[in-house]
Length: 504
Length: 100
Image (tube, chains in turn green, orange):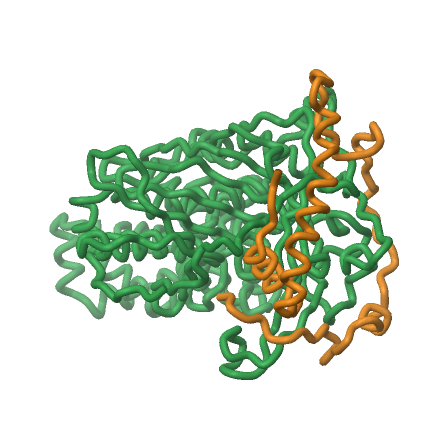
């Protein structure tokens, strides 16, 4: 089928005529020690075909057995998403002709997911402050991940024109939880942010549960974005596209925007949106067609006769419910109240991925505001320069708290503190070691300070005269001169006191 | 009674990468229909049996779980021993047509 290339309609303009409806499917790879149905390591990577056994290679005579820990993780994810947990559910075989599963089928769940009918609430920034949207969860089900294909020949890595393909089954059988939303219809201009916030929330949630490392860059958290448009004011859903494996939070947002523009272009031209899989391109922010959904996609699901049904007792479910940690959204609300942060401060802190870091810094003795100040300004800037996450910086919350304690004690000032950050980040040791090694302590020798103050007054007679006339604000110029002479290693407040004592 | 058409056999053969000649297609379509008819007699067991729940597992077992403990894996040599072709410690398969 050929698709006529039609123009893109700018996102904002598209929203004047159409309303987007989204559906998000997120795959979470569990961080169990072993695979879903066998005892092979469920590790990322590894030399090809070293994490395989007769079960995950689908060899004749092998029998899969369910990993109890994976079921437990699935139930906990379901509970954290306010889902109902099935009293009985089964695994089903999803049959297809593609070599990424050596069995010719993937074990999944079909009409009996382990968790269903849930919801979660996400927060996005609106013009008048935070807005909350409820996202309904249709289901969360268990399945196994597929192997990795490598296409050889033709244009490298592309399946088109490849001469043959190579398969590594290390990933085949790693436990996956697929979480599917119901159609999400929020005000169109909020749709991209809501999609992003939802995926971020799932990431935070599975991390809080400790069930996955949720690394989008390694594919342990993968999002598919389904999107359709309908004319404003109508109820029937339009034809959707399914954009696969959108691998960063920002891409989730961009994929929604792009698909809105693309669908609107087709609909405006009187065309018909094709229901198809699309691929997102990180470099251009666009999508391109994958395969069209055809009758080849008849998965002939049927219950897997190798696997007994899973029937979690209510006692077990209740016991798991009791193990749920405080969930990220609740925790953020509690911390915001404890820290006295404004909505904006809290949003920035969360947006920078600094909630845990600030919490740990506060636990190590800092005030919340100073902890926020260091992480969101000084350290965020450095993380940005190094293009790493804040948490990847080579400095601990304890170090930050110690540096602030040194400032509070008057041993260093903010300016010197920045140099201490440099030292710690450069691996020169603890804050105290850096202060000692770099000689950064504030000069508290009153004699030296007093001499510097006198020199500054002598060198700036005009300023001194103003201060004598009562213009105390002019003292700033003299403080600056003294600080410069002391190479920043003085307590500015003390310098000010000394200047005023001399001149008033 | 369900009937398997010649076209359906051809399509499934294509998906399964089984090459079938015209004569084979002519023979297989009615053969498969017969097999399906035979299997369909099973559904008669349901008629008049009242509330019989469909069964997916021959035993009443439930919750057969394995502890999350590592078991020995195959060596790559063992894993690839039965493969018709391999390269770089990976299974080599013919090119995958007509997909993405």
